[in-house]
Image (tube, rainbow, N blue to C red; front, top):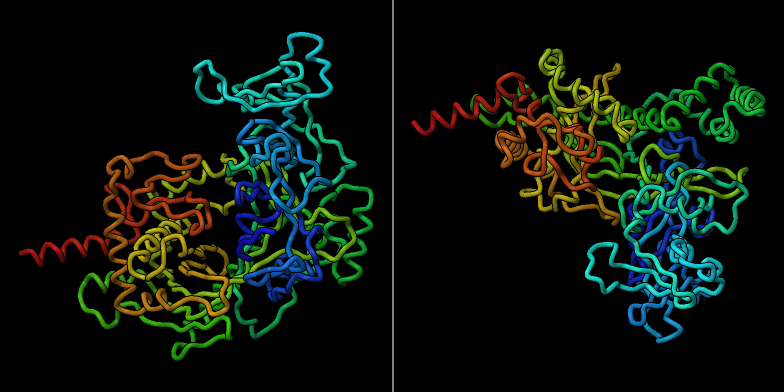
Amino acid sequence: MRMMRLSQTISPFGVGSVLDVLGESLMGADISEWPYEKTERVESARLEQALGVRELRSAPSVPSYPSTNTPGIYYQRFPRWLFCQDCRLMRFVFGNEETGEAPTCKECRGKLVPMRFIAVCTTRGHAMDVPWDRWAHSSHENADQDRCRSPRLLFETSRGGSEGLSSLVVRCTTCRASRHLGDLPSRESLKRIGVRCSGKQPWQRSTANPCDERIEVLQRGATNVTLSETTTALDIPEPTSQSRDLDAEIRQHRNFEDVSTAPGGPRATMLMELIAEDLKVSEDLVRRVVASSAEQNDGLETARTGLLTAEWQAFMQAVDHPGEPTGTPDFVVSATDLATELDGEVYRSLEARVRNVVLVHRLREVRVLHGFRRYDLEASLVDVDLGPRGRERWLPAVESFGEGVFMTLDPERLADWEEDEDVLKRVRVIEGRRRDSLIGSRFAEATPRLVLLHTLAHLLMRRLAFTSGYSAASIRERVYAGTGSAQEAGVLLYTAAGDAEGTLGGLVRQGEQPRLANTLLGSLEDAAWCSADPVCRESRGQGLGSLNLAGCHGCCLVAETSCERSNVLLDRVLVIGDQRTPGFFAPTLTAMRDAAAAAVK
């Protein structure tokens, strides 16, 4: 039995992910292998409805000192090929050999450790061991080596003085066949020796669906072995007037998954008629929801947009009713002012651009895992539940409690700024690259509003790490940049922990005046000069897929746990401006410089 934090069962060690612990390598099985009766319900009616599932549940929590009867979730040893650190003998560990303890070498009783490489399906997300016995014999020199039926493998380092993977050799002591690992990571290296995809995940016992897709070799610790797909939402008060969300009801119907996975199948028409009859809606509406789910990443992007819009409206209710903190026990907010108690042109300029500030004294965040991809984001999504169909659908989730600061920009000034042709020209470059990028489909359209707010959130998070008492990696962003009827334009900077008591109030305190105003000014000053300037400011493309313009490690990038968008879609020129492009906060920065010059005189 191995221990981990409850939040880690969603990310980074959720379903399909590799967990390295105490020298062993394990992979999390899908939720059909979880002890459902031991899992705990996570209440979030809004999220359940948006995602179209019956319920959300978290992995069973355990005491600090578990016993043999303590419930847990299943992790499969992967890879199963191990080697002895002492005598270098390789061994494949079968499932019926597992005892719950770390395996040892049968020859010298030394410790067995997992091989570094695994194979993954680039299209359907399957994973398998590299067949090392076949690899060792793939460069056979005679018929005996080709027909070797009792391989005894050693994982050795060659003595020829070569470097890199070419110095690592898998050798069979039975027939003396051997091959080094230099060619292993090359494209289709396993296909060239006749290896095909297993068509299953490591914890699955059998499969009836053969897979002929391409497989590639990766290091088991590579980030693209498992690319998790999650959705996060805040627990907000229910709206005063309940309206029927027909799209959500359709997605939540027990037959919707069968239709959405095979919309052109022979049973699709019949099932769509059944959904329409059960919900008393038109068949055309059901077809539109099915089509949008297929086009928009299984409808997740639509659901996430709706969740953000509802949260924006909840924050706006606090703005419309200033005074004492209001909300629910898990959503306590209060509106405050930015800099009314401060004098000077600098603060007036800042107030003209920041419309509202809301202190989030307490919030509850629910994070849900949908599935994962392997190799790249173009691969098919592997569902988090690979069990038999027909069961009512549920998803794994985890809840966290915390606090934060929410702020919005002035809508009139923002609307005028984002129509500037030079601003639009810079953002068109980013949007064009997003459309062409392999990861672009994960993000909403890059608009001036989105890039500005996202960059501003990063600048603020970097500054708050010095003043709030929280580490940089524990502060997160939530960007509200919708251009629909609500015209959202705000950011939430928050921190959350699994403890029900939440956090310590450091961010809320930083949201009070004059602290937030001074933090904003400090962030603008930081953004005005990067240690990589002028290269960074004048860059034509940085980061993954060149999806950033003026944004690098010296000025804008934050921890992966903090950013919603993988540290892309950033450009600090849109915040502070340059000789050609007007930055939204450029007048405030100019006022700061004028005030500093006047103080010197």
